[in-house]
Amino acid sequence: MSTHRDIDRIVRSWLEEGVTALPDRVLDVVLDELPATRQRALGRIGRWFPVSLRFAAATLGAAVTVALGVGLLGSVSGIHLGSAPETSALPTSYPVLTHESDLPAGRYAVPDTLGVPITLQVPAGWSNCSHGAEEVGVCRGAGTVSAGVTFLVVADVLEDPCEHTARSGPSLGPGVDDLVQAIIKLDGFTSTEPEATTVDGYPAQRLTVKAPTQYVCTDSGDGLGTWATRSRVNGVGLGETNELRVLEVNGVRVLIAAAYPSTAGQATQDEIRDVLDSVRVGR
Amino acid sequence: MDTDLVIRAQHGDEEAFASLALASGDRLHAVAHRILRDLHLAEDATQQALLAIWRDLPQLRDPARFDAWSYRLLVRACYAEGRRERSWTPHLRLLPSDEPMHADGSGTVIDRDQLERGFRRLSIDHRAVVVLHHYLDLPLERVADVLGIPPGTARSRLHHAMRGLRAALDADARPPAREVAQ
Image (cartoon, rainbow over all chains, first blue to last red; front, side):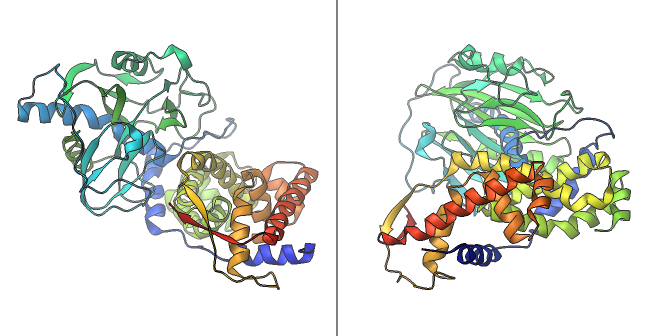
């Protein structure tokens, strides 16, 4: 039996172990974000907004992914719009995206838990930024980044982007169009008209949504809530762009989001689109 | 902390804030890592906290309280990251361990393993009190101030947390075990 003095000493000794240095890349990201992060005036009431930057980045990135990849691949391969090809098992030679952070360049398969067989080409310098079985993503850079491509099985879209805990729940229908229309209705966001496209031959809808550049919530924090999987609410940063593709494969509705912040340069956007273009479904 | 830097950063001086972030980043990250027990989550929490500090800095009325105030924002970031943690916890299973038991109960592999398990069972609320008090060596009154809770609540949380950790260590009566990824 441990005494009080024992446990205090043991815990203190145990807490002394572990890292203390913040990686330079994290600090670099923070300093890069400063120009786009407006300081709050004195007297405004602040409240914590529980949406992580990595989460926002992954969500934004994921939104862009599907539509772009579909359109390009469809035009190259001559696949007919509106006729979904039969899926086949993915080659087993591709490594599966797991929880490791940094990823060597190469083609990766999403985990089976997503429910859709997808592979994608990951450039050098990218990392895995997945958040559970229904939100698989890769991000430009390691750890905390602000651009990437994510595949999500969306269960809900927030009725109020300022309220991260309230969900539309059963009001979101099961179809591709249901999700597209719910996203278009996100308060404060601007959206392009949805267009029919394909992702590796699968019929899809594409649209681009952009988060407002100014705070629209009286007590907002890091960003705005958007859509949610069954386990997590996603959010986007102010001014971020999400290029979205929504498709259904084997009865599973997938949102592909390619995201980048308003400060992203052309090189970043091009790299994200390369990843989008590399998406393959069931082959 | 240099209050001049804080004041300059409050007025939008990015260079001053960079100096603040450089000076406080390691400290914040160390605390986040000890609360969250995950490097990637800790990096995210630290990044969120630093940006929140920048964003809300004009609202800090007493620049001399920068350190305590920054801890409060960091713990809030840890709450957010802690919620995310549950959605991506690797599957673990228990296997019999060959590690020997140590009678002195300090600094052993077994202790760390049991502590890690016990600590992860605590809520972020309780972890934060333990880390602020036992790692940063803050008196409970200051811990309460940082977290914005009554001193009695801080004391209660610490008591509950330490009781849980002690129970984790005292669970050695059963065969030791270690975790491995499936």
